[in-house]
Image (cartoon, rainbow, N blue to C red; front, side, top):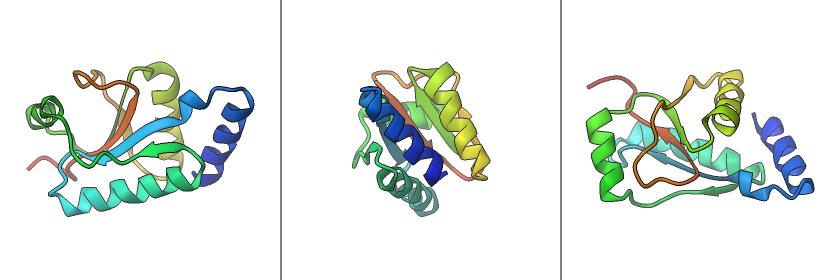
Length: 123
């Protein structure tokens, strides 16, 4: 996964499309230590691959309400660009053995792309 992310980062910078390398990575629920740990591992891989990865320290009230209403399970990609970046990220992560889905709906108020690690299973 790291090699693929580096290759895309290099190509995007040469094509002057560095905007496509901006991504947020976080757990849905920071109090869940297991999902927080996996999210942080993913964050480190993206950072080491020269992506503009951000780790939000808190979620907005709207995002927290969305997560409680939808109870995300597993690794989910929320993105405005579902057919390009969303699908590419999903397949890249699946190739690395990380079961990932692209969310059918966007989180209200979210712009860009968020890789979210939810619960391991429904509570």
